[in-house]
Length: 415
Image (cartoon, rainbow, N blue to C red; front, side):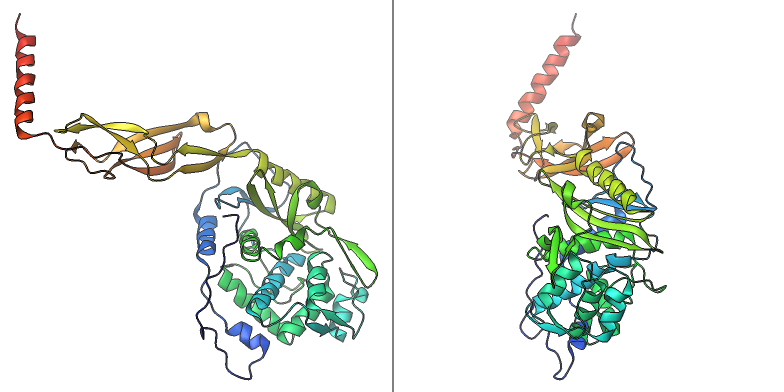
């Protein structure tokens, strides 16, 4: 699942828009179906229980760690509590921008004018994170994207929002429409930069789902999150993500007095990717240390193991009235599980049949299942099928074997 899940191409005319609509109206009008993989992820994050691993604790009030390829929750803490997003809201802003690029409603070389609002609310005068965009200058969307990702520029988000949707308010409506389409069920956005607003909130669960969406849907844009610096107008700024230097390749930091210090991050090691969201920490140092601990926990303390290989016999089952007495049992596909490292020895497996097996048996006939358990917890049930057909023995042979069995019994009874 690490590879991007491409959205199915829309049929010609499926996105027809009335003539005269603005970009904002066009974008808000879209209500395409969610890609299947994202539906699966949203379901998995809601329903799957976290794996029991070695105890992990964090000082972060809110935290979620998910394995990317399996969607398994590895650690969770207050994941559905509504929190102020701070600059983590910019991930939703980027999702809207990336989708607009994909739909062709904007292009990277489009140039937008820095308005008075963008300059005053998001520029140097604001005291917040800024790209230092000069008032009334024109900036390419490509530079704005880098300014949002790398420099966390509030002014860049306002300029992009106004250029794409006409106003910050219209863009926020598009953000919420896109959030619902993606599957964010407990988030609401009122601006593109994440500056404090009591009506704006997210959850750790929604943030991880959003991160997964960005990674899967936009493989060409995602590498921008790993860029460590960006220079614009002669001013060089460093990426604030503290995990980039220790193995992460995205995504975004956030901080306001109300929200505390937060981070949404992802890292890949030895073919395994994890995603995390943490928020509410008291300092940048605490954010750096706690997010690194959680990232390392996900990458080091779990392993993917092969429990069953496709077509490899896992046991036998007795067969009555067959030309052979047993039939081998196989699974149709390989079973891989993500488990706490070193816990495989604690797992037991039990073959459970559907009842007595009487010949004839067809190849591939389902005969039962194998259950993997850890203590009282059922980890996975896997259907088992007959590896080969078993023919029913002939009538004469059955009579012969019945007589032979009877004679053997009589012989054993005689003194």
